[in-house]
Image 1 (cartoon, rainbow, N blue to C red):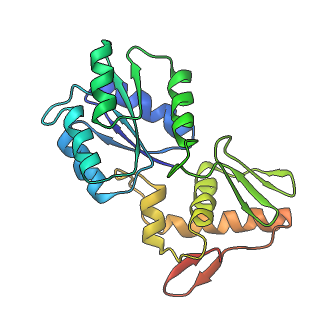
Image 2: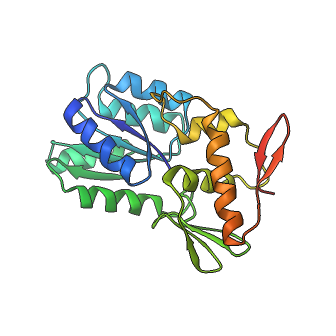
Length: 221
């Protein structure tokens, strides 16, 4: 799941990126509101963590611009502003949740999971393809009830292909969803992840549900 952290404190940004990456999120980082809007125009995000007191354009401006453009991402505001009026203003501007600094990491992770479970446009929590099941909340993949020992990138690749069933995704498209914008890797890394994922599925007896369309990309029909 791709997530944008909009926070101007380098120390907090680093801590959040480290913790969230460990949880399997693909994180991009923006230190001000204008950069955040630029990221939102370029990439697709399911979730945002948004500070309110930002340089160039504050969090309220980001929220208003997002909702004006009908951006579908869920937004968790993370702010030191602890007055009820601040929370009401943020929620009225388009935020989906509000957490006051300082905060407990476990609570932040729980709130992100809760946002991802919301109905309407929220991601489906369990993806099924025959006897292959992906629980996106627990980050566990199972074949006929037995857990598959997938790396975070292998899980993210399989999740992306299952969410996009019937749609052929190019190597570049997959790379943009699995790696953040600061990554030093190239899209050739996708071939390596694809190979190890297919090998693990084959060893488990799941065969190979992924089709390669030469010159176009990959698809699970």
